[in-house]
Image (cartoon, rainbow, N blue to C red; front, side, top):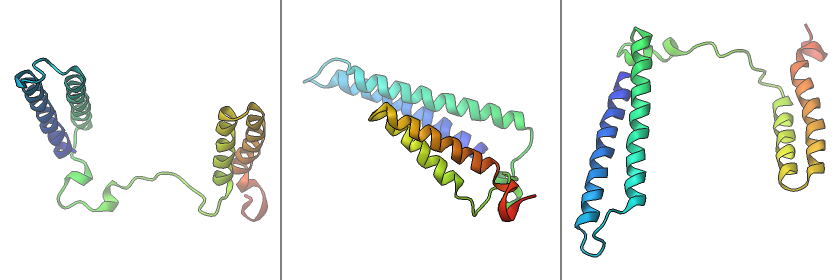
Length: 140
């Protein structure tokens, strides 16, 4: 992670230098002769964005207090692989829930009456997803 933070600090310096060169170039251009504000503002904000991200990641890295597994040269992939939870590989309910959410947003764009269909199907899909281990072959 420290390498990534250093790369972001270098990128911050790069954007800062490019911003200064851009302003100087636009001032020295005989056809233009003044600061081009859209590009200057965009490059300046890009510099600030990368600086904010680098600062945040630097503080997070310092607060961890130790070296991460992915930063070690002898680290394996499994060393930094946390337990993410339990997911059902055979479950169809997330697909139905995504389809009902798509219907809900389609209703916002096309006609409000479609939202009610999407909301009803979404409640059924959410209930089915929550209670899928209380019924059928996988009941506990």
